[in-house]
Image (cartoon, rainbow over the protein chains, first blue to last red):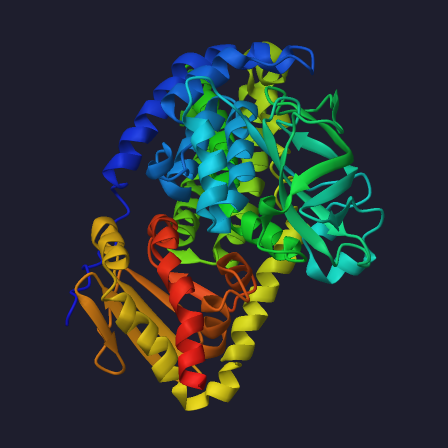
Amino acid sequence: MTITAPSFELNFDVLPPEIQRFKETVREFAQEVVLPRAQQLDQAPAADFDWDLVKQGHALGLTRVAVPKQYGGLGLGMLGISVAMEQVAAACPGTALIFGATMLGQTPILYSGDPQLQARYLPLFAGDEPILACNAVTEDEAGCDLIIPENARHAVNVMSARREGDHYVLNGSKKFITNAKFATFASVFANMEGHEGATGLTSFIVDLDQPGVTRGPVADKMGYRACLGSELTFENVIVPVENVIGGELNGMAINIAQSNMARASVAGISTGVAQGALDKALKWCGERVQGGQLLYKHQFSAQKIAEMASKIDASRMLYMYAANKVDNQLPAPEYEPAVAKLFADRVAIEVADTAVSLIGARGYLREYGVEKMLRDSYGARIYEGTPEVLALAITDCLYRVSEAE
Amino acid sequence: MSIEAIGNSTTETLGRLFTELAQDDRFTAGLRDSGISLLMEHSRPDLRIFVSAEGAVVGDGAPEYATLTIKSTAATAHELWLGRTSFPAAITSGRLRIFGKVAKVLELMPILAPAFERYPAIVTAVGA
């Protein structure tokens, strides 16, 4: 019995047709619908939320990009998500993260391999009305301690879980959780009682509209103001045993696997932030005349623009490469997504900073929207892996390969 | 019974599992409808098993390419089909790796249900 392997050609020019079409649809949504509202979303009070924007994004499929087609999703994988996130983030990264965080909340269910769990939750995203999900990891005293295995035993006051018959009881609170204010369910990580620090971390899917769950106040953030980050408090919250992902004590591995999957999409968001800032800079430098010629004709300005464009192209290629790897192996690779995010997060800040500089005094004014991009650019450097966490992941991979050789 | 006790019977238990599944209409229909062929590459001991809607090949004659390739030790595969570990646990711990479209892996999971049903009986029969 022989099976012919498909011929693999390296093709940097063409996305898979389905993803290309989706990218163009999302780009139109981002430029025509999101961008005109971006400034208003940024300057509105912290607790304001634009459901109409979410509904329109949901209608396009942005709440279910990675959900398999058999459950009503688009089935476009991490490459589809990442490409879409770049397009939305170029207009407003806060809006992009509403959909990105929902995807993150879905990921453990996708990873579970449990058809019954998947059938209960994933079709919810194909309904007429949008629903959101969230991923609840960070706590008041535990951030990186819940994603670096060596730190687990040092974690303190981690949210707890205990088994009682056919269910678990959860107690504790989570902080800075995107979408927590409105999410239907959350992927929640809690430490099994009797285990030191976070060594007993376990992954649960928790319905948030139930007794014992309290949605806390919204954080007033520097950027990403279109999405809401808030607290979730759990007081004797009941979770059925069927809602555990990967069995007890595997939460750290699930969390890491989730992050490895998601980092390419965050790199997509950072690339979008940089692209949005570059777009504004290009417009300005293509219209502003000083010294008798357009700004971009001046060599120092041209060098800045060239650097910005080069970095963005490199960032884009890195996240697409990483996303493609994520879509073609399990567990998701650790190295390529970490590299893509580390690079893209830095590029977003550098490009946004240069854009503010190029646009001069007007770059400093709110009405031009560029200072917003600079404030937004710092966000991705914090969530889903800080540069410090990513550095540990990358060097761990480098030395692991060296040892194998 | 542990995989160590089975020892050289690994070929028999794991190979027999997929040889039998290749005769199971429910299993083969799932593979056909999803367009999936599966290659299991085990180590300790080395064993290659290929299965598609057309049949199963165990050993060196197994094709080099399949839609999805699953790599693990024979012991991990044994634990998995006995239900002592799960796919998420085995994957996230790095004991099991899958190559090929992840979207196809999601389609594969329900198709594998008969494997979990059959394997304990096969192990019992081999050990008997």
